Image (cartoon, rainbow, N blue to C red):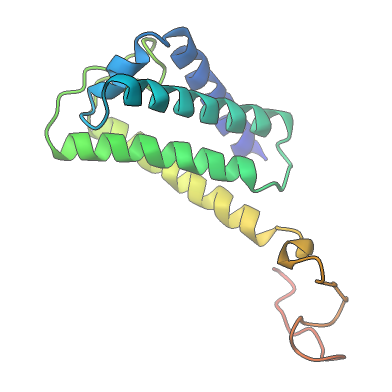
Length: 165
């Protein structure tokens, strides 16, 4: 729960900074060398929306088991990491990574790559947790949970799963 609150606050702060810098965001993203013009504007809006959705969800419902905000968070983290890694590998000079728009400016460096790697690590932890705690009804409408019976093991078969799961 604490991780979700921290990530929620971080993503809301990122989105707020980027939203306040919306006219500059396409140019900031264009510096990564993958998108320009209207595509950079669309990417900026998508990143900001994704950061707001997952950030607000994590802050408002930190105990939620919903997979959707975790997937949105993961998608945003993957996009930022891909932008940074490819630009760094190509030797591009990115004066402002854009994480907070024109605020808290830092240039693209190995330190930004470490930050992106940590976001990906957190995304992996959140994904693993969300997938492990998904409700049994996710298997389909005909799925019935019977205590003590392993699905697919036959009627009356004892549950031999590890109780710590």
